[in-house]
Length: 303
Ligand code: CP
Ligand code: NVA
Image (cartoon, rainbow, N blue to C red; front, side):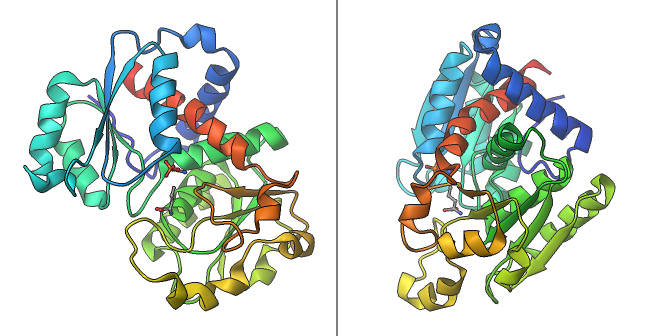
């Protein structure tokens, strides 16, 4: 029975911790995993642009002894020339796994149903699970644990927020999500994260006030406008400006570190000087994309 990775929402806390542990092991002992994907081919298909995800999958798969084929959306959406289910069924004829970045989560669900091989979500409108794994790996490296830490997410409630909520809840990380009115995270996903958190002992606070970020160990932010959102910046800039992550917020909250999945927009959601400061974990997060994904690939393709 093949296993996909679309959200992590159906994973147990134990399995999530084991995957994080596998990522640490692979990062620390690369030679032992140099043949983990020997003879395997992975198709990575992107409906949206990417720097980190595309390159970290390609180089990571190569380090595991496998081979990646990159497909862009060629002319608009993936399903333009034929149905998504037919694309997925064809790809599964040759590939051992399909990595996909899509506009709609529904496309991933269709891929999952049509493909006989594992499907990995490389970002959709609702989730970015590979990002969240890399982010908690980064926190684990910095603090020696994830359980009991507090991460405050500040900004737009989006795909990255949702995956941080789910994966953080599974790992026992307390979370504060601070968003402007009208830009909240998805209520169903918050509820799911809260039900997971009730099992792991984590707390999840949802707020519109920056004051609630006080006491967090780390502040996390992301773009105010995600890919596929055509809202002009001018239309939302004033709403989001009070939610900028900057040196004052770091001082007020007492947070040790700042995180951002990137691409970052300097002096919009985060000050450029903070990105360049000693508090910044951005490049460690980027590096860990590859190690987290290599754990996901090793897990899905060897089970
Ligand atoms: N963080 C992230 O997913 O970056 P890319 O969009 O460049 O892949
Ligand atoms: N929320 C952002 C994440 C980019 C990695 C987006 O979807 O564009």
